[in-house]
Length: 217
Figure 1 (cartoon, rainbow, N blue to C red):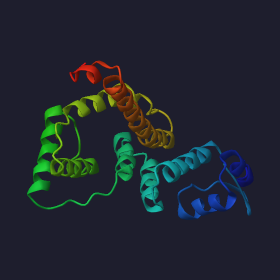
Figure 2 (spheres, rainbow, N blue to C red; figure 1 turned 45 degrees about the vertical axis):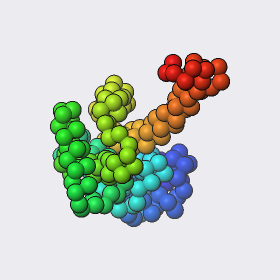
Figure 3 (cartoon, one colour; figure 1 turned 180 degrees about the horizontal axis):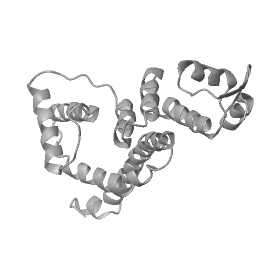
């Protein structure tokens, strides 16, 4: 297909496609004439991936380039390719040197070891979780994350990882990871809040056992 057809099929404007080509985010088409190139399904897949990274992942172009490089490196195992995208999605966390931080980070390490999870020491989520634990301690909240870890593992092992087409095109696998991580993450947060409202209504609404007796239902 011509670039005009690629634009119509993908919903991406021609100037934007040309920008992706210049930046190396989109691979060049097959040159069939001095001023004409042909594009195919691989370009459509790549444009879908770029849009997912930009619009859903909210990633800067520099991070997208790293992910595209991993996608194009056929010698890189799929696990590490997906990890490149996963790490790019993580929020930037600045370690907070001091006893509180060291204690929280040690708790994260102990938790992961106890769960038997295989997680790289440099995984950004380790610091993200440590920072969260620091805030929880400061606010006097319970830092027992075991129930949350168990729920997360069940979701990931039984649902999340089965939505990624490992054996298909590498672009498609990364796109599925990004969309699933961000959008299902948002859906889970929303469902949790809805469940909290429902459970609050069950326990505390007028006429509920607790509202009448002050005891646990």
